[in-house]
Length: 469
Ligand SMILES: [Ca+2]
Image (cartoon, rainbow, N blue to C red):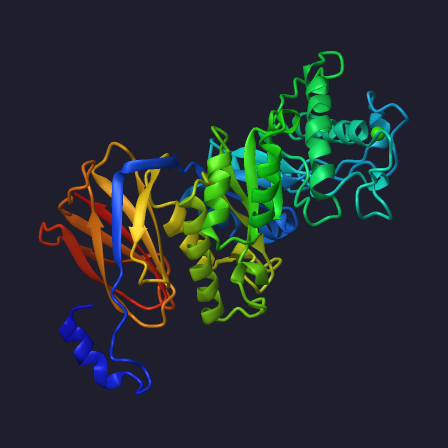
């Protein structure tokens, strides 16, 4: 903020504050410093696919999620399907004992609807439960069973066969044990699963006699811990252990705990080598995501806006530090808190939430397959976060700044070329999600072709600057 502005504002400042205004943020973007490609978003329908099916505007909702948003991945939960052990031989399946939901009576229904809308659609299957009989009192997995790994591999394979045979779908990515830091599993038992179950599953897939359906081996994603802090610790340990590490194709974390700490993401990014890095679950209805104890129970605009700003902050931390696929937990839900992108009360019209519009600006405005690029934002701006993309071909960048600050301020946007010299900006389209706007274009500007583009950054908003040079 220039000095004269500071003096102009001074009379309005409370008397106990020193007469020094915080400096306006300077956002520096290096579009030719490519980090990873941001591939796509992910979402799921495990609990509320029926709400989507019952919505009178369901075709519109499917268009929102799979055409308007850049979402190529659907997460589906594996079905419990085995109430009692099918037989004593974990190398042979007694299909008469397994109980799957009929086709089109499970969350796979969404995949069938979405595939024609987005031909790139891929499936992430996740084990959010274990076979009922292989748990202690129906809860934690029963590791005391001497055939635990073989029985679990058999159950996973049966699920993959069902997907292929009854649903006509391949599982592209398999998350073998969801949130293992949460469900009485722990690091060593999780490691045992990746060490033992993956080779057993591969043996099923590669055996033509046992796999006449042509089920293909999915990529294995791990560990999808609840907390990014724990994910970082476990991966640091596993990186040196070939028997575990060689069975993991994609590294993943949920963003419920430790999600605001860039260090967690930067360290996983340094560990992953050439494996992709997925943020495989979060939602803004959860208090740990919001970093405060309340759960946003109401559907008030201010709560929805808080969720959208929180998503902006978390997305910028994760994708700015290596994540190439970002999951927003649920596509639809009837819950008032923003656990889903779309609010869908059963049998009633579904509507988009502010997190939907924030997610659109953060993940879906850029040319598909664009690179995440290096950004810097002045330290004096703790309420601001930024994420930016460049396709590699176009003289164009998409820069989304999330401002959680309670007051508006000035902002300087600066683009640098490969040599660190300023790129003269030609045009700027500005899109905004705020209390009153939902990913709407608010301005188109042709600033003087100078090194610095100075603009106003309103309070509490996400602004996407589509910039050409
Ligand atoms: Ca069995």
